[in-house]
Amino acid sequence: MTFDWVELGETGALWMRLAIPYKKKFGPGGNFGIIGFATPVDENNCQVYFWRTRKVSGWQRDAWRFMYRNRLEGLHWAVLEQDRYVLESMAPNAREHEFLYQHDVGMTRVRRMFRQRAQQHFAELDAYHAQAAQAGTAQTEAAGHSHA
Image (cartoon, rainbow, N blue to C red; front, side, top):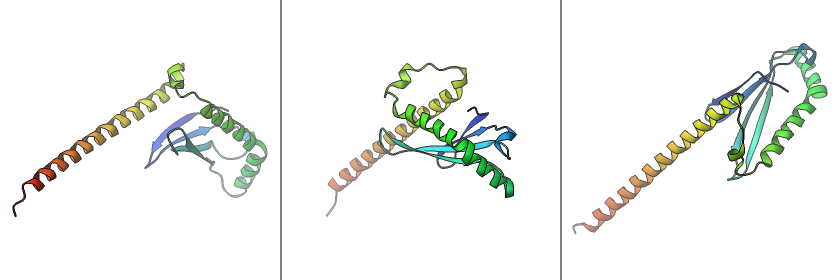
């Protein structure tokens, strides 16, 4: 299965959308779209969600649903299962042993964006903790100089 492009979006949550160009023999409508996102469950696990989209209506929608369920859904589940297996069987240090190609530039940019964002969040958290500690010291000093 090949796809034309992948888009990373952020609308309160990060998500990815991809478009798979299907030939007319696979039913009416334009590109087949998949929108997916993952949400962390704990340090080592996440849940992944996918929505399938195709812009069709009326009898063409019925024809597309029939074609999808009878010809394509099994293929899509097989690909998703392959992806799941790859994700679940990755070594914790897999990124240290990967070989990226030119077509992986987008993923490299996304990783850089995530790393910068994480560094920004840690800096903000450190500043918050420093401010809270300073406020706590000021309150302690003020409490020690009360006039009765």
